[in-house]
Length: 421
Ligand code: HAM
Image 1 (cartoon, rainbow, N blue to C red):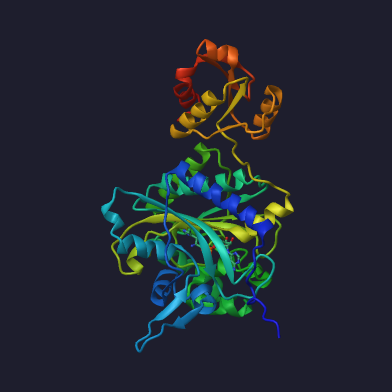
Image 2 (image 1 turned 45 degrees about the vertical axis):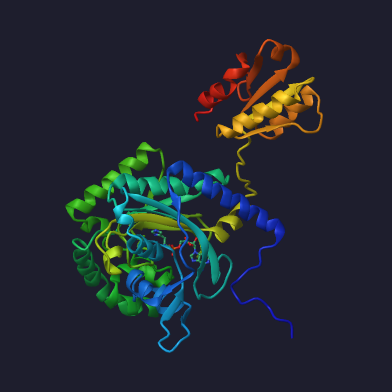
């Protein structure tokens, strides 16, 4: 019998792998712009990390973890990571990252594992791009991670995504929320789905975001968590919204947004494709000021997100979206016997940190300009024989079409200045 791949997993073949590579390149590029450093943590961790981090009463821990006994006599219980935030928090504590200047801004990309019923957009091995800001509770950090997530989707050319936002408070306001929700749901919980009947005593907040129709109906008049926020959380939420407004990032308030992991405090958000059905979330995240303590560390606040890349790719296919591939900053075009100058100039530009390219095919000047346009070069440096004799080159801004002569010896500095490097 021929052996098939495990259910809920995928093979990525060369054509699709190219797309993945483009996306990965974009992730590294954007995270550099936003000042995040990459972190790579193990694919498996001590099971305890997720029990305490993600929370014992969550779907992930109750039903979805790939847990196994390690080898050896006292083999520890290990789990394939179902998500990346608890591992990043563990790594922060274990590697004493609190001794570094705060906050520590990290990002990751890699496979996650959840045992769930496979369906379109839901896999047992899937990939996440995540980012976490650790060591600050400043509301501008919440807005920054949201901005990074939205910038990622925008750069991929995706349209129509909706940012949904909520605040679910802190240990100070949670008991008030809980009490109000228990009071509201206790009369009708018997009508809810079996999962919600279980959740009711453990985490009544979760009843708010159940996708089952009956539960939605039962919860339609439920108290709004935002109305129960303590003054500190209320102010934090106002500030997050103010920063989002400042950055012109539109959002929809969704008082039903609770998220399925227990570590969240204050800000919770999801990025969804309206009308896409059950697997409509392409990403989600929020603040988790109690996570580090829950896994045995000191109190360190944090905020972050994770985006599902299979869902992102599916959406790109659906929308025939293609990522903006940044072209070289500068293309050096030349005419006549100028090869030595071109070779040296391109080398100098690259050494100065500018993406530079040139022609190798003996194209004429016009064809080189067309080629530069195809490559999406931002600037062209035109090294003509006649100009070079005067120690000059022409700098052309490809967007505006403006041209000016500059001194060859100034070329690298001028480009550094215009390209903002
Ligand atoms: P999450 O909402 O569980 O959050 O997952 C984030 C994203 O991963 C989802 O929005 C979805 O796109 C994708 N995803 C989740 N499960 C699957 C699956 N079975 N198949 C395909 N894609 C899936 C977290 O994981 C948190 N760690 C996010 C976070 C980071 N919060 C703070 N920092």
